Image: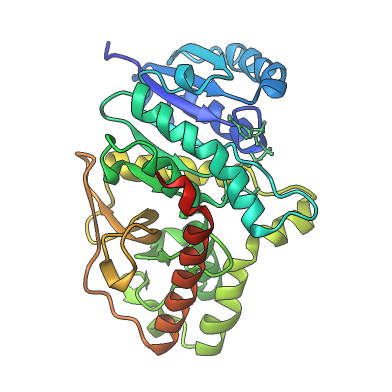
Length: 328
Ligand code: NDP
């Protein structure tokens, strides 16, 4: 039997955690024969609820799940972890300014980054889901200088999946036919879902969907505002689809992206496409099964797309300025 993979998950007692942990335990993410140890971090008041989740995991009788660790200590949660899935974040409270939210989360992600740097396995890869995920990822990475920069990710996969689904519905095509869809920028309302470089059945999207007003208007805003639409319909924020996107994200990074395709994920910019270095920016990323990845080069943006990129870059620059004191 292979050695178990230690997977640390923060905010394990939350909504997204509830939809995610059972799918990891079932073997859907790492394969049915790979033993898994779940290392679940929660804030102290949520430990009791976390125990309930652990009881249900036990009642799942998952053959691959060899152990579950429950803790409120980051050092214990990340000990020996090969994956860290950071779901837990401080929610926006009434009257909170954007800067307050960034600072509250910085106070969480700095120490978590340090603990990852000190205690995780040498092959650690971290995906930040908790919002504002791009900037939270930047803070965590800055606090773990010994972990290579290419092991830190911020999740935009749900946005990618949402965009693909919208394009499939509009064109009357199965969603599996939609490829090469990149989300550019921040996981926020300024993100740019890049239909122009996406393909349906291998053809450029604007050739298949000729309604330019829809692509540049309703399509983009429906992807940007989908989270709010789910809340309006369900009375709760999206959770199962977010968990599903975490799984898609891990699998793409582990198994690699299909030949000729890419996936969307926030990574630390090295200046690609004129994005300032160091920002966590969602790009089209080509991943290989050996765990390495590259930003897809050479894609073109028209003026409207370039304007949208400027807006999302400016927002990320503002976020960085607000947390600069947390970047070490
Ligand atoms: P959720 O499980 O619903 O959400 C967790 C995080 O994921 C939030 O930051 C949320 O951002 C983000 N998220 C949710 N939906 C999406 C989506 N569709 N796309 C991208 N990101 C998404 O929150 P809960 O409040 O149910 O649970 C949070 C848990 O985290 C609580 O149990 C809390 O105790 C825990 N926590 C743990 C910490 C720790 O381990 N140290 C620290 C802080 C909290 P958004 O709010 O913008 O939707």
